[in-house]
Length: 92
Image (tube, rainbow, N blue to C red; front, side, top):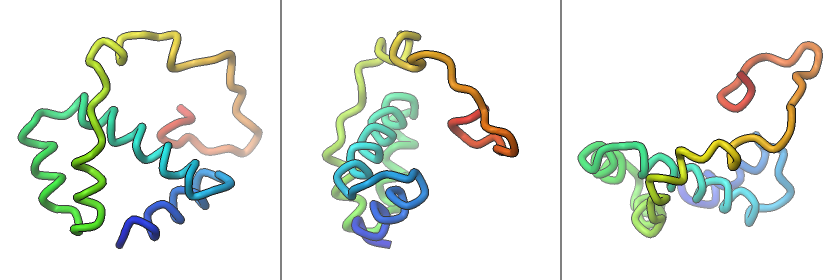
């Protein structure tokens, strides 16, 4: 899988409108992961990625550690589940 394939998959699965939006989402997720994972685990992940994705992993900086403690950035209002919706990583 290369970068474009990853971004296309994220765009389609998340219902985003562009590869640029998917890129922002992936960068945010990688930044959070790099903040939460130990340095050794982050390096293992980096080494296991194809070259194209490995380069992307390297350039994303971890978020400052204190940002993950701020509740106000996680939830903006109440999100109601739609009938028939199944829990996912982002929905319960």
